[in-house]
Length: 210
Image (cartoon, rainbow, N blue to C red; front, side, top):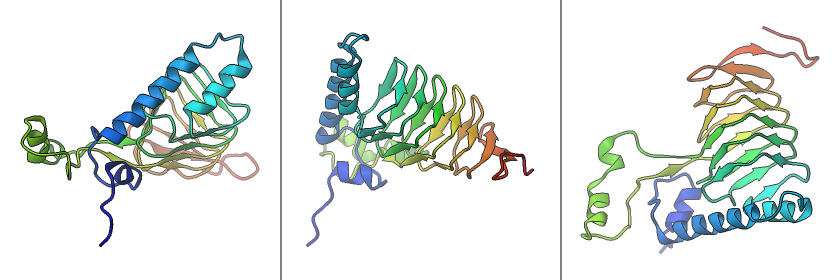
């Protein structure tokens, strides 16, 4: 008989899961502890801060520059290439968030890998109500779903943009400030709006194709 997956395993598999599971909460607490340790190091101690930064994220480029403050859910599911991330960015990393090398991220960008069912009866199910009233345990309460986010190399994500779970942004693409990206965006283009749509493509030689 196959072993029943844990809520954490469901989370990483992009399946509905219970976000208040003890293992998941413990991992989030560890992420917050790593953040506090990083923030306690003086800014002038760049070497120690870089080491502490490596403990927050799953992996990070040697030359990544992050302007504080920034916010994480777990941190360990975030994988950063060498680039620049401006102030106030949020990584809701219930699943893997990958940002490629030489990508620029503007201020207050949100990477939201985690969401909830849109239907109210799925989001606030009878089993969830039963859990909070002590009538049942936490099994099979799918109140959360987390999907991976991939941002390619040499991208520019404009300030205030929101990148939703399940989205891939191709290499060399620009996302306009304030855009909400709900679907995949191809490489070498400009996408703007809510929801974001492509308004321009770039040729391989750097010119506009259309």
